[in-house]
Length: 96
Image (cartoon, rainbow, N blue to C red; front, side, top):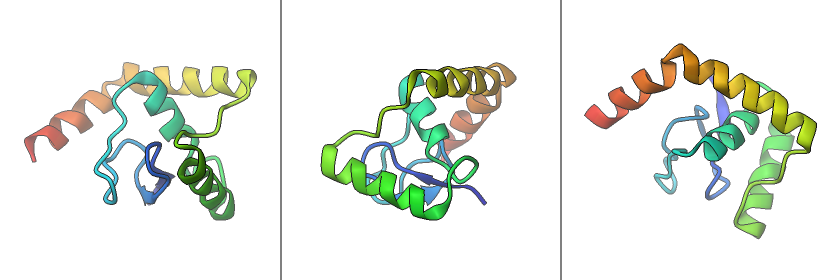
């Protein structure tokens, strides 16, 4: 199970790219998806994710990645995107 932080409201949710059960936001732009990928338990522990959620609630936006980390996450995201997995996921979500 993947725990992630909603890029919009800061709520902890299941899955980086899944809709938030609190605010129904779903990452759609590349930047939203990269932030959502970064703010997951694949990369950070639960207390850090909770801090990120609190930051979003206080500032209305996710914390900024440093330039080197952003390059790494962007590369990771491009690999996920190239695999076609996101297209398949979003097609399934749009059908429901």
